[in-house]
Image 1 (cartoon, one colour):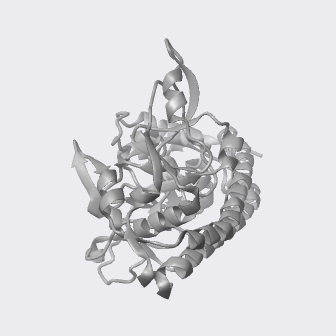
Image 2 (cartoon, one colour):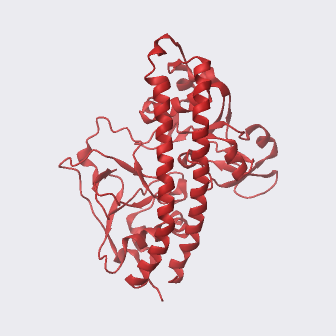
Image 3 (tube, one colour):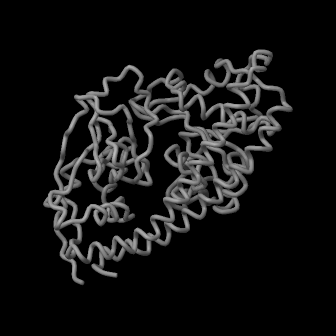
Length: 397
């Protein structure tokens, strides 16, 4: 089967349907793995009639931060019920589905080469975005529709297994959140607990490093560097996209991440996403990726009292989901910064008895281990897909 390349703009067009009739209030974002997810944006008081209304079979992408993430978050919406996406997103559709299959196009969007080309179209800055014209000028192989669908079916077999495992992980995360609520939010005995702060549970904090892209001079220590953009994946057991960097040996000795440390994002965010994202780095990650792991200088490593490890983590995640971190941000040269010291020292929380927190640890730790194990399985399956995707370029299976 031979494939002919053509510019993408001949097959797709922008659409701009707004939520003027207030059809839904379900706001979705797109993660760097190119899936829709519930938005973390604080939309309280926001006029959702200005948001774009996406329906089944349509695409959306976030053109911002491609320079930072080295990926274009783009996804095909496959749910029956419509949803909303940010007014800043591009929303588009295929002009003729008898010529270009929507799932085939989404496969092409998932290629690492596609993301590399998108990144080359940016100015390389942290905030570098991509234009609609840039996307339309890209070339795509377009075999006959039957050939496209054969490729898609091979892909879908593995994709369905990945989706099943993702749903299992989503359920495990929900169980962890429910247990946290039962132990600490809905617990009637909490009125007897002492007021305190996150800082009381912190043993130490360590800044990050960015080093250099290549080995040179004294920058010889090879590390995996966790960025803010890696934190959502890290919470599900993966840092495979964390870049390799080279830092000074003396810096690694003080900045290395150890088992059960946490990484928190200090700078970054967006108008609809606060800084302060956090993730645990368990022993499984260090074994899977190697022990030479640090965080970038836009993040910070937290060493937490082990007796309060999962209470600290789940409480932080709970407050983040509820938009609290927006109140602890300031901007510098267009970049948002998380006021870490103010939040950890001044935000009042109720500190549970140590015995209760230890009991919670005992219940939660196996759940997190299973989440990470499933995360590794998902990455293995995704590697299988990466062997299928290049065949699009060569025009057949």
